[in-house]
Length: 246
Image (cartoon, rainbow, N blue to C red; front, side, top):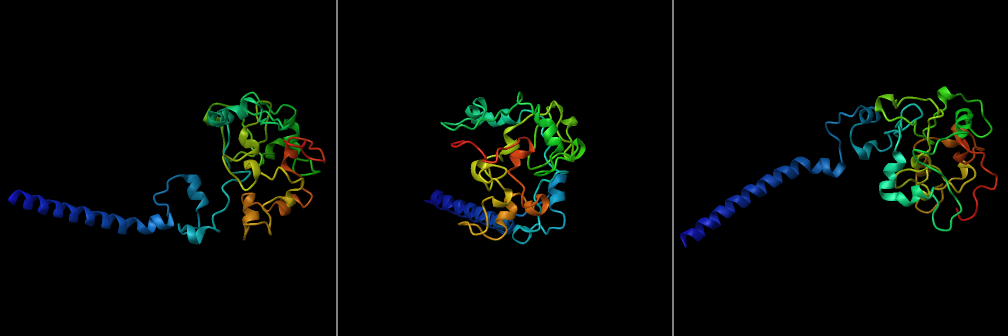
């Protein structure tokens, strides 16, 4: 009987101690977990984005700017499409063709921009081909520079492509999701960017959703109301758009 009483006492003490410890942990972390606050951030890119913010996502959600610009972005070297192919091998090997769709587009380490280099570098917006390579980079239509040494990459570079540059999956798509169908970087189904969906009045759309669908860029103010689909950065897109069933 004495042994049983001792065991009960020990278990009670251990239970109280562990309960007290958990209560302390909860009281010290509940607010941070609820509001998902970031502490001890050392990454310079994240710190730059959060500059001027109070580290409270509920308060700061409209203060934090979109994460990429033409002069501050991920600079892709090579192998991005092959990384995607770890899960999406069939899409890469079939040049994007899926089912009975007619649309095909190469991507990967062998998909050089070739003749599109000149167009990409000169294209500023619909009807304006006065651009130069030094400032041609458009974060909405990124590409791989075709290099393997990270030291050769520069996330602040505004340089457009050259003859070693390649098309990758992320040239036209976001990884896994975006505001647009097919995880597109833009609305593939709209001839004019101004006609993109989501748009005001669409089901489920509210507030600044259309603005942030292009990552905080006011597309009409920046490119004009006549700006066509961003496929134009590399291609002379037919006025009737894509073939049926792409």
